[in-house]
Length: 181
Image (cartoon, rainbow, N blue to C red; front, side, top):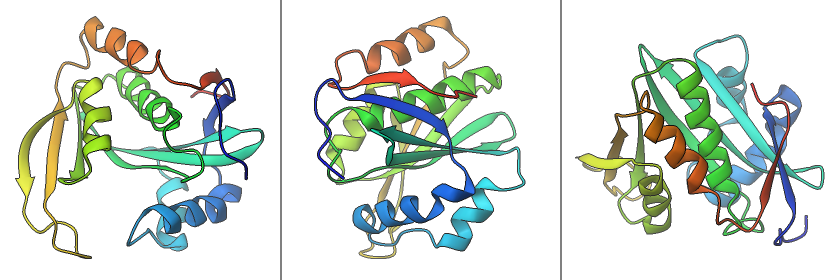
């Protein structure tokens, strides 16, 4: 895989079983304790309460994201971008698609956990309106780091959709769509 550069179109599409191995490889580069292949497979197969997407550049998967629907709320379960593609706005496009999906499902709020030390991710989530609402002490088992719990509650308001669409407007890459669902 080559480094993603300005002008490279990103295609977002629903994640399929054929993507599991490349997604696992990305997770192994990004996360200290990545999900197992079996767990990831369980997340994408046979359930309508899970929504996983991948981002492709030049036909190669460079990132992925997941959303779990719990009652009337969306829980962002993962957002990961290959190190060679980080900083180009792919994570922004992935998160925007999860937000669009939450709106289309008429959910009332979204939540996520993020490492307290992950300032870039916290900044990305804040652009979408996620705000800190609590801490899960010692959440990350690899080093005992706390997780910051973030929520956005206005997703039914048109201003949320406007914020989502504006959030990625200044990224280096352009989202070329794909089979949005």
